[in-house]
Every structure is written in structure tokens, then in C-alpha cells.
Length: 275
Image (cartoon, rainbow, N blue to C red; front, side, top):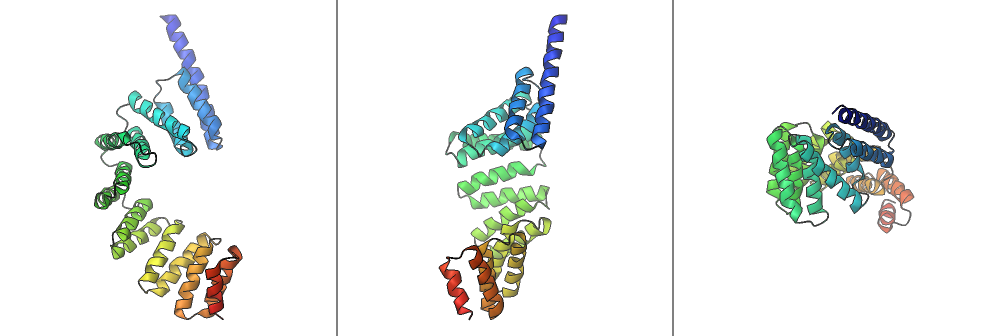
């Protein structure tokens, strides 16, 4: 008995060394080596629930690299909920993984697994927004847009200042013809996270379509501040100025767009129209 305890203690200590090395490598963004160290830690102590959280975060980052990387994420997420069936976070990762298997890889058998994992995560932690977001992604894929908006709305009741949820809801609302509601949601998204450049650009185009040119210009200026090397943003701002009759400003923007894409016929045509 004493020998067994000593051996277990030795293996646990060895696993912990690998785990600490994995954490350090993760912080250095050396993710492949980090995964190797996490796997070695689990080799020596396969039932240590604590190891899975950080490891799953790294696998999630690498999952888009290949189908094999994604399969390892799914396997380890399944292992995590087996080791600790009371952990909502692990069920949430598992639901996201099954959801991606269904949406991105066409694995129809994963759909019900994803929904079940979401429900289990919410049973364990009712005030948890991510499972609602995972369900919304499935509903969007199935073109059940009302159900998707309902799920995101529930997530926002839990996290009312979550910029990404506001962005998703806004895009769904616009897609469904609820443009005013969509604009309001998108404005909340950049209120809570002003760095989401795509939302500034979307707001600019929506205001342009609505005829609110001054607002369209303000929104696109913000997009350009965040991403000055996007030719389309300069072209869109040029179109706003052109519509307002500010031809000199329009010409500057079309010039900026042409510097980034010299062979673009539309930008060249609009620049000539400003002369």
C-alpha cells in the first residue's frame, strides 16, 4: 500500500511539472509545445480535472488549424466532462465543439449533442451567456432566426454589456429587416467595445442607406481610424462625401483607396467624377 501511495505521489508530482511548463509555454504563445506538455501531464495524472481548463483553451485556439486538431479538442472536451460532470464551463466548450462539428463539418449527429451540452451547462450555471450563444449559432445555421435572436437576447439579459452579443443580435435584426433595432444593437456593441471595426463600417453603411450622411461619415471615420489600410472603407467614406457634394474630401478618400488598390476601376471612376 505504501509503495502504491509513493508511486502515485511521484507520478502526480511529475505531472504537475509538465503542467507548469505548459502554462509557461502558453503564456509565451508556444502553443504546440504547450499542448505537448499538457498531454504529458495527463499521461502521468489522467484524472486531474484542474489540467483540462487551460489545455482546452489552447486546443480551442488551435482547432481551426486542421480537422485533426479539432478532433483532439472534441476528445479532450469529452474527457473533461467525464472527469468532472458538474462543471458548466466544460459542458459549454463541449457544446461549442459539437456545434462546430454540425455547422462547419456537416456532422448531423453532433447537433443534438450540442443542444444537450448547452442545456446541461445552463442547468449547472443558469446565469451563463455562452451556451445561449452556442444555441444561437445552431439556429442561425438552420435559418431559425427568431429562435437565434431569442437566445442572444437571453444571453444579453445575463451580460447586458457584452459587445459581441450586441453585435450578433444587431446583425440578425438587420438581416430580418429590423433595421432600426439592428442599428440600436450595433451602437451598443461599439459603445461597450469601440475596437470592433466591422461594426463601425456596418453602421456607416446602414446610415448611408437611410440617408443620414453625416452619421454615415462619422461611423466610417471611426472604422478608418481603426483600420486605415482597408481600401473599401476609404471608398465608402468617399461615397459619403461625394453624396454630400464635398468633392475635395471625396477625391482624397478615393485617392487613398487607389493607393491601396491601384487597379480598382470603380475608385478610379469615382475619382474622375470628383474633378
